[in-house]
Length: 462
Image 1 (spheres, rainbow, N blue to C red):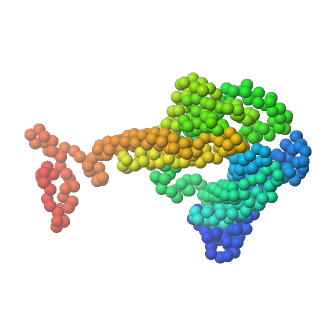
Image 2 (cartoon, rainbow, N blue to C red):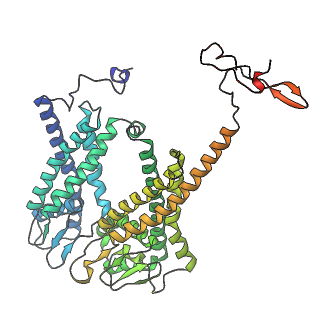
Image 3 (cartoon, rainbow, N blue to C red):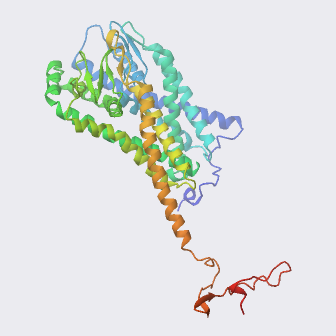
């Protein structure tokens, strides 16, 4: 067994510097490690996107776009991966960006957070925050520099969004990576109270149900519109390399499609242009861009598919709320009846907040004119999800917690009064006029005490 394995979780390792140490050299080392990890994460992400852009440039070269233009385009795509809006000449602002592309910098920053704390003694959450900030600050500076350097007459990324979005993504991703290096999930979960854990678990359960059903609904919608899907591919005729790049773009937009499907199940639906709507009650769509994934959009002013299918989809949020309520009570049953429904409703509110943020990032403008409104409404999704999931979770949590408390009360009622006294057995000792009298053999324990009074009743019999 190695020396590191023999040390416990709380044992300090003097071979690694403590980031909480007040010495200036420890702070400088932590900052240097953060800058190095941030540069590595940004460089790897930019390299991957440069390879993809170069492959597309070779397959379909355009006049006036040299190697400098390829690098600038890769930098813009890197910023798009951080959800930074881009102003394109002749098209307007492109703000509906692929959420799947965020997975690339997210994974690299997660590894960066782990690598920063690997050489430091991490024992508290404040050290995790310090490590995340050590990565996020230089990472945001690099994003700002790329936003300035990638500007051209064709496209320009937003500098304020580049600074803010990259900083937030770096803090979250690097913070999770650093926290995971702090210890296993069970140890991290022990840092929060049981009530907080059960609410977070219920929220995760409801989001998992909604996400799974949303992904299934998206897949079924695509399967039902394969002829439209193939027609769009034939219209675009991207070629072999273009087909591969187009497939990657659709995979990057799949998380957006799942969130759109969740908004559809919740009821508010989504828009694909100003004055349009796609909802279970019916869809009103105008001309849409030639993108194969959009072939899955529902059609028909009175809804697509049979009526029972729309009813099933509308019932999914309530099912997610029931799952949240059950998980909340199973992990930490409440001692009071009114506490369980409150925790269940908190799960619904958190679920609505997460879905509202997701809806805000899943939509955005796709240029000027009618395409300035694309995607679901964030406040409508958040409000409806909070009410539907929260009410269902509150009812389910209240019912299950009442059942638990009822069972606990029944078990407590069957426990003998003297069950906590070792060696105690309740047996009939005398019978008077057909009545069985039980004697308390422990009644004389306090007889020697000055304040003890001789008990009265059947136990006082000789």
